Picture 1 (tube, helix red, strand yellow):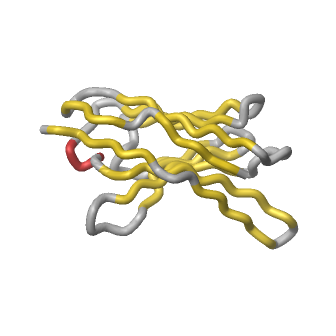
Picture 2 (cartoon, one colour):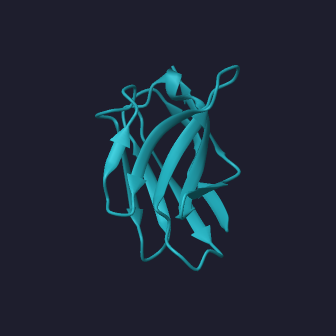
Length: 118
């Protein structure tokens, strides 16, 4: 399984970006997919999650500004980020989860940099 993120970049505060995560090589669908981010000197944190059924969950810091979605037919996930703030600056990682019985398998992308200037 390979996860490839794209769409990061430099944007001014108040602007928007759309991140994409394309999965390949799996041959199966993921139980859940998520976006994480890690700012310099901070721990990686969950930003948003979407299940195979379409249920979503967001970190409080991004609620109302970010929207996660997925296209199961393309094994692709998106993160629409609006009203970006300097505190959103981080490397954003794509995460995908599959389960086999009680065993959980996590897959990660290489990350894409998002920089928000004030």
